[in-house]
Image (cartoon, rainbow, N blue to C red):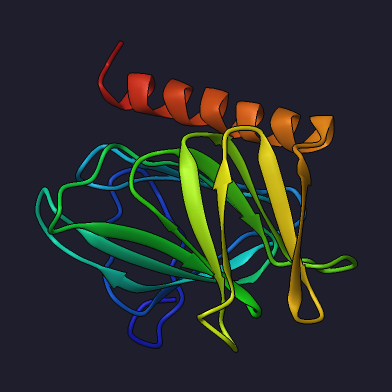
Length: 174
């Protein structure tokens, strides 16, 4: 959805602030930010891009309403940022590979494959945790519960990486 109108996404489709991307049960979406970062939106997901700044120093703010998002974020400049929020937490990154799940049948969580991500409670921003490589955290009640990254999350992120790399190589004509 863009400016109140529904459109099918296709290669080269450009959009900006307030765009909403929805995927069905048998669909997924791969997006590339101008700085080279890749975003994978999993099946049955709804994502709103509240800020998707122009140029080589974008300020990306993604609101995950449902489903899963995985991102491979290039090292950002001081002028740029990349954040993914769901109902209870916001993940803020500087250059890493991670995923955010809105929950659905379980608690929302953030998982980090490589790098580090600061996760903070949306209801109490002073409650935060920094996750590093191969960690995952859920916000349960008013506390973060952290653990080693389960194999199923590693496999999901690896699939998103592979799909994103394939799509970017195809777009570059490789």
